[in-house]
Image (cartoon, rainbow, N blue to C red):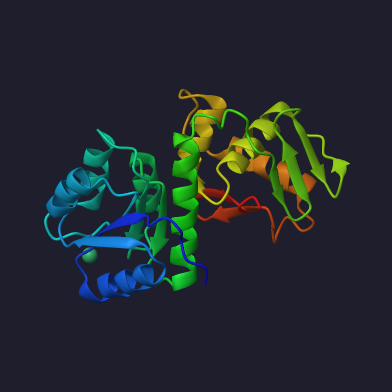
Length: 237
Ligand code: CA
């Protein structure tokens, strides 16, 4: 495992001691600087005093709902938030993302998954801060490439013809690759805030995209379904 050169600081807001110590040990081994809080209000105070690079947030806290913690944080900070959820409730994960969380991880999770989620969120947050990144690096993973400058999508070097909506949808996912985007977010970004809540139009477009870019649309390599939540595109190289 390669170590991070600059120490990123992570605030862990979690009341379960064994999860807390598992995460702390894992992250310390990866050279992250970690602070933990066992309540929502401690978490909010520590965020203000420490300005962490990332927050891992348990939704089930003793003093307040994790969802309220996200809403309070989002009134003043864009710090990436990864929700730790014990609940298999997809609706709630989607709600956390729509409230402003960047990603989620479901208990029980392994070290590899935890570290991958953290790396992705930190990378996205750095890109957001980097004002010089007006030029968007092309997406590339396996045989799929997307050049945003000239609007060209290729698979094994062959140009893929997409409708305007399909292109918008695919590039939105690609520019956020590695990150789950909720149905609500995608619907609003592509069709605007006045579209009704029915996801049918989104699913139809996604099926068409998959037919064009996936060898086997039933076992996708590029765009994954997070059932009941949204879609996540494989992270760009
Ligand atoms: Ca808890």
